[in-house]
Length: 181
Image 1 (tube, one colour):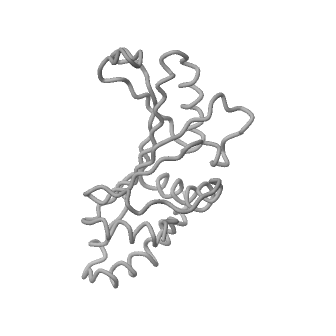
Image 2: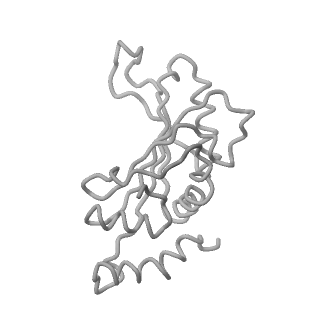
């Protein structure tokens, strides 16, 4: 298997740039990606299980990995959810698949979002992980628009081992993530 394009760029260009900018003495001090988690929450799946199966198939096509079904931890009567009922699916990407997905997300999917003005740089948590949501799965080129049962969104979390928000922001900016100015 060939090394992903983004991983090669990270090793050759991004790590030296981060070392210069933040004054790291060793290249292992530079922050790196650990995993990417893609989550689809479908509360309507309790009424129609075919929606969940379609979402699983679409997520498998997008990521190249079979999703795991997420279940409700407790019953919520107002939302007609029973304990342990299937309410979504998620995928955790690591290593080569993670870099391939991030490359497709940055270069193909995000530019296809209508009226896109950039991602918010305020969506970092205290550990330097970045989370954002997408409104519909149609922006991925792997999805056939004619075969969609229902348009649904997804939450994407990029987990990094950076110590601060500034280091994480700079790492994603060097990867090419389009942030608002």
